[in-house]
Image 1: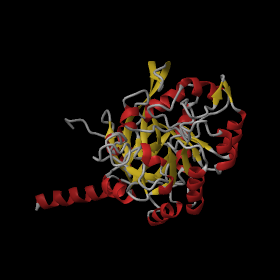
Image 2: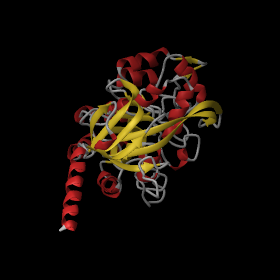
Image 3: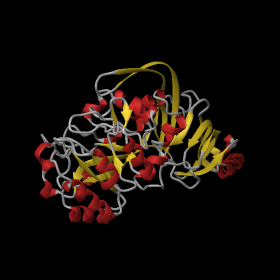
Length: 411
């Protein structure tokens, strides 16, 4: 009888405790930065069933099963990388389309705070469904796509010069079949001296109500950049590799001066994306451009095997470069959260709004003496560097550098 009595008390207490726990997780004492809601203050977040339920202060620790103390750390929406290459496969000599230079996402996302990544151009209308089956459906990371206007995707060389394979109608048909996964259309690496590929990709963008992303250049002589930005692209279209200085492409800074039409284009609504990559980011472009008013709208990696082992490294390294080039922390966070979400028309992401999916990143801003390298192997010294402490995707901890969400082993 006594045993049954104590068991009843235990069950009642357990029931009462579970009722009192309004949240699965509470993140306490962190500096919350949320560009959409114009928040930059110390506070708490409450999460239940994968959804943000509360953004405020002084949530009781008795109301959650898991408490994460983020004191002296930065709490942001899950980071969004809008320029990556993730159509990893085993087909030889196919560059970033089902081949070896692209990267399966989960090994490179959560540990750098990324919860959403966008493959840009790896697949086209001919092979998107293979990409979906092989990568998107198997990844824990949220993987989205800019479909290549070339049907066979970013296979390199002659494949990307095949104007006959740039089919707006077939591209739109695949977008309409998978509207939740395909957020835009990409044009890259075309070398010919004509506007036909640009016209085809913008036609697909117009028909599908999607932004286009342009990796512009390679033609000899150079195609006029002012014509592209002011007359060919629409508000909301994306000009990537904004701070590149490569052959066949007009740089935004010439003789240390930012071209006037570049600011005009940004004011018009063209989105300037970093797209750092293995060859598309030059301090001699970025530093004077920022000093003269061209800050990036979105910061992204252009992740692939070449860039990750060069000066780019990862998204946090690129963000840290911009911190040390004069952007403030709120601007850097905005450009990898809310501004990126708006750029891909996924405004359900990129914020810490009550009711939003609980994709959350906790960052540590370290002070010290750090070196940063561009794609010309030129170095810049800096005294700030971001590091990911913890990443949550859909309310679940998917990366935890120092065990913020773990209990001590002897408890």
